[in-house]
Length: 69
Length: 536
Image 1 (spheres, each protein chain N blue to C red):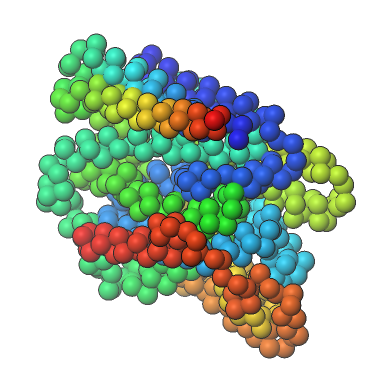
Image 2 (cartoon, rainbow over the protein chains, first blue to last red):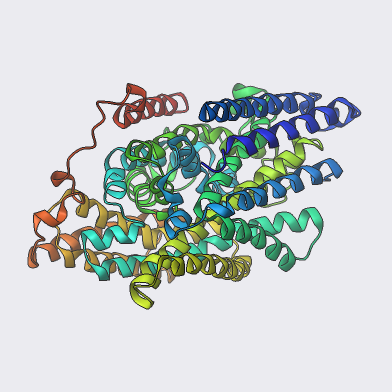
């Protein structure tokens, strides 16, 4: 296999997760009052995407270790 | 919608990844089989998600959100009545023939089972249909670009088309499938918060049911018995036979756009699992598209404010209403991903059918493999250019869903009768397939003209499409059977691997229970029945 699709998925979700969570953490809360019913959705959804990205990356890493040995 | 820098950054990053996957796969495309069929080497979970995602174009996502706002939960039938049984059927019963006979496309299967003229008729219809459909996604993507960046429509169309063309040109079907898997996850993560925030805004399912502008919107089945009772104006017969049987089986079981993903699988069990794996997320997709549509109509029952007077705006309007900057970028990326996967699915299916079934068969046979590989690349560019042209045709239409269901009713509905008879009745003769298919298409055309010029009437365009599909199917079925009795049957030895009664069943006893297609299909259908009962 040339490319394990879990690498790009893991990388892009980790990146998006970090950007979204940081943006949520450092943004004025009035934005979320106005839009997302007072929930800091950027922070929470960013963390969810981060977890998913790291999980995909871990799966890809495990597969690459296995194919080497 | 007022996107900020962070939103543009998220969307731009996505395009970098899409193109990056194309470049990473560039070196692997050595033969035409690599380019058109991914060298039949991809694991089942990847082809399964791609099978699901290739169908997730603009119409699926924006169209069904719009339909939900217009017709209510009745739209669940497109998922639980239509898609589920058909996806299980193609996985368990039909994939063994497609994959086992080593064909490279659906028309090629028709040549093996029937004859050359049946294949050519189907290949030409399919090529035209995919080109007409591919413009829809391009159109939707261009509209989004135009709103985001304030580019003129033509520049937006060209920019979106160039991205799709580059990644398919470089990486062929593999690139398309890999991007579809990435797109699948982006679509889920991009739209799920909409369901959560939307439900919170209307006070959960109880609040939604209490506030829907029409109490009938809260039911999938309860109003199906009489056409006058339900918002779409279709009774149980039209719904179950037209949508649940003819249109859905015609699409999921014979449309090469989705079947091609199964053919790329690494072995027979993976090919059979492809539609079954796709069925699991598909079953829960109403949560991501129908629910936001229902919330939109609940918040704006007159459609004048949030929706701006158009049902098609339901999904983008909900994104704009509930998503703060940051998440808005993710939501917009999910929309773009959906349009690109829809467009790319059409382009890869077109270039394969064009190269193998039309070019190699009729125009320039007997060349070396590398010639057909480069033809596939040229066909990709050609398809995208024609897609740009169709995007401008689509711009002149005002109702996309009717445009598409009309095309499906023309070409897919009769085709399913041809396949059903060909695969399950060994007597079906070589000539009958062509005449059945031709008469089915003509019946669809005749029905369309009668409806269009008001000689027959239906309560809605959607009802007309369902009945057009039923007529096309019945005519194709009857003509194929009648012609069969007047022509020679084929020798049974030639039909091994093509007809159910003459083909050994794929062995599944060596697989663990959770990988056996039959068990998976039963589990999926059982779960689907439960969902139907809950949202009765």
